[in-house]
Every structure is written in structure tokens, then in C-alpha cells.
Image 1: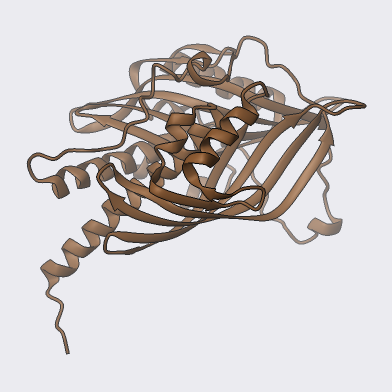
Image 2: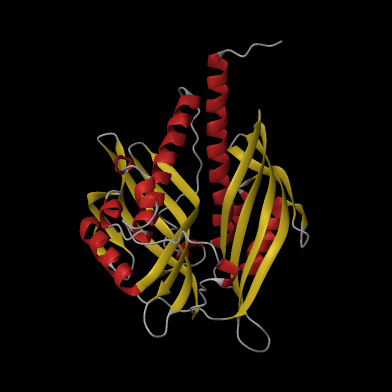
Length: 357
């Protein structure tokens, strides 16, 4: 019987944490390559000799990247949101399953354009190569799709997503992975993974602050001199936090910000990041509307006195769909009595200790 020493277990756990962090970053890189229509960036998510099996194309990943980029070059911006990532590490190889919701708008020969939401999963095999963890083979699984006549709305004042160097993120995110061949690589990679976890907590807390209408919680993720630019409400973080919460509470029955595709680049005590968001909102009034919006947060983070916070946030709008409110009470939802609310009435307000802010 082989006895595994505590130090060995610790080192194995650290290596798995680092590998999982890098694989998740690479999966976000793949979505970014598709949505920005950047063939080189998309191809860089794959290992040399990688293959894909989508059904519509089965073969070399390099060919897939070229075919996809050419096919989408003149189309609207797409949006590939990955979540539910389960990663299994085995030395220099790994496997993962990721859920993906893709959005695209397509022209139709007759009638209005179509808005399409497509749900599926990526089954990926990964390998550790010179550039870091990369996809060796991808199989795509289709689970569901929704197709509706175009109900897109334009949110005035917001930056609009685009392809390649036309997108606001082009000069903001380099697309490079963590890489260092000098010093203690494992410890530096561990520091990188721990920093990314801290940044994840900030962007998740921001969503919670907006959705619970909690201005103090929202302000806590920013440095006091931070700037926030959404195109609707802009300003310094303390003022922004008060104004956005007041607007949300005054105009919405509820809102819900779901985050994914976190891509962070750590640069010492500074970092930049791109995070995808799908936001749901339901308005008050005599003609209530429900809107689903897809976009991205471009964040600059700074670590001061050992603590990471957001120093600048900018929202990029990619798509939206708006309809008459269809929310129901009872019927299929009978018995679901724990409804979301504003702070301090929401259940999460007492679920988390205030010191966790």
C-alpha cells in the first residue's frame, strides 16, 4: 500500500488548482476568439494537431478556426457564454465538460431577422504544452435551442460590441496566458490562481450588490477613486453605487446578473479582466417589460494594502431582447415561495455574515 505524505497531497492539490485555473482561462479565450471573430486568438486555444467534432465540421482545429472566422466575418456579434465547468486533471492531460449558451442574430430571406439562443456542452480533452494548457480535442453536444423573431433593442449611450480591433476590448485584453519560465513556476502560478479567485469574488459581489439593491455592498468592490462607465450612469464609484441602486429600485421589479467567461490577466499588483454577463430585468408600470441583455465588463483591478479592488469598470453592450412581461405566480411555480427581493428582505442578506463583505 502506497502512503501519500501530506506534502505530496498538498503539492498535488496545488498543481490541480493551478491547472484548473489555466484551463478555465483557456476556455474563456476560445469564446473570446469566436465572439471577436479573431482567427489567430481562436486557434491559439488549441494544442498543435488538435481536432474538433461539431458535426457541421469534424477535423483539424486550425481549419475549423479559419472556416468559422470566414463564415462569421460579415455577421453580427455572437456571444458564447460558458459555465458549469467540471475539470478532471490527470498529470499533463485533463478532461472537462462545460455548459455553453450561445446567442446569434441571423438574417432571414423573408421576414424579420431571427434571434437564436443555443444551449449545449463542450466535451474537451486538454494537454499541457509549451504555451500552457490547451484543447487537444473538442466534441460539441447540442441540447436545446430557442428561435424568435428579432426583438432586439438598442441601449443608447452604451458601447457596442464588435469584431477584432473594432471592439472596445481590443487594446485592453492581450489574450496571452500566464507564462513564466523563471523562478518557482508553481508558486508564481499559484499566486496567479489565487489572484484570479479574488477578482472572481469582486465581480460576483458587484452582481449581488446590484441585484439586491445594496449600495454599500456594491461600493465595497471598488477603490473610492474608481471610475465606472456604463453609458447610462457614469461616475466615481461611491456616487455610481448610490445612483445605480436608486435607479434599479425605482424602475425594476427585479434584476438578475449572471456572470461567466472570466478572463483575467495578472500584472503584478494590477490586473485587467473581461467578464461576460447576461442580465434579466423586469420593469414596473402599467406596461411592464422583461429584457434579457448580453454584454461584457472590462475591468482594471489594483491591489492596495494587500487587497484587490476594481479601479475602473466599463460595460460593453452586445445584444438585448425585450418582450411583454411573462412572469407568472402560481401554476407551474406553485409552492416556490422563496422569492428574490431587495436587501435587507432577501434571504441572502442574512445568509452571508456581514463581515464577508
